[in-house]
Image (cartoon, rainbow, N blue to C red; front, top):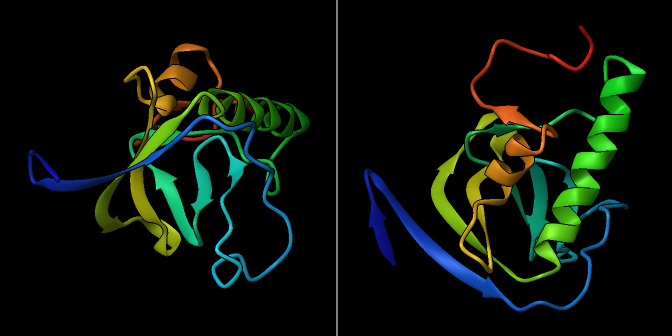
Length: 134
């Protein structure tokens, strides 16, 4: 365990082993799914997580075609980044919609969400809203 500010993080290492699947089907918790929903949301062994401090374009509830397309790009880029190995650093608190907040730490030490922000596929959170449909 690492103490970081007011957070306690428990890191669960995941070895490199291929691209994570896109989430599909119901009852992901009971099925202990590990999959990616979009650029800032996924499931890890049946626990739904939301990336800390990152906001990615929506796919399922996109407000415009551009947002949906960028959301798919962000999701697929996150899957590719995580394929090289990653660790989930749980913040041990929930965000909106009851998702566990976490940082996806890549094998090289970078935070996956920050990579997506630098590449223009996500934006910092909190922010002033949907910039992809303006």
